[in-house]
Length: 198
Ligand code: 5GP
Image 1 (cartoon, rainbow, N blue to C red):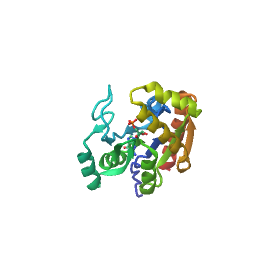
Image 2 (image 1 turned 120 degrees about the vertical axis):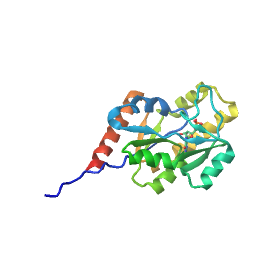
Image 3 (image 1 turned 90 degrees about the vertical axis):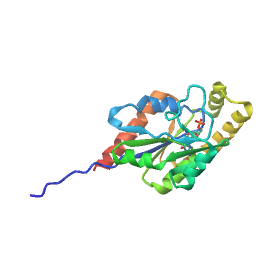
């Protein structure tokens, strides 16, 4: 009898977006190390300056505009977008390598990047995190106080615009309670993993 060899399923591509200050990082931290989810975080490339406490190669690959442009022209990016004056992009080869190893790759990217990912990988799992209300969001953006008022204003305007684009996401989750939001995302990922294995 012919023996059936089960090949390893390619890992999922998961996009998480949400306006600045919505608490994406806090929610993601709560489930990213769950071994059952087999997640790998994709480290983006950015032309933005390093913030206090950020580590090159961990938070981002911090590059010059020229280096970024070269990567883009050479087709090395799965997607890229300008955000409040800086460029951000996802290195394609790293995403593919991890997915081919069966890891579920998590991208924390903004809305224009998500649109490009959806065009290239239509079965990507896309999730948008919304704040309980916009006043709360403004408080959180201001609470960071690491950036000048002009940038805060740009981030607020961008947040408003991003909220208008949530219909391109498969799931919209409110971060009223970070533990609950993380639990819901965990459930969705598990379900997608089950479906991918069938
Ligand atoms: P921040 O400067 O606060 O680290 O990030 C600004 C925005 O850029 C956030 O909304 C973040 O999700 C997004 N971002 C980070 N990396 C990427 C990326 O590789 N591609 C895209 N399109 N957006 C990114």
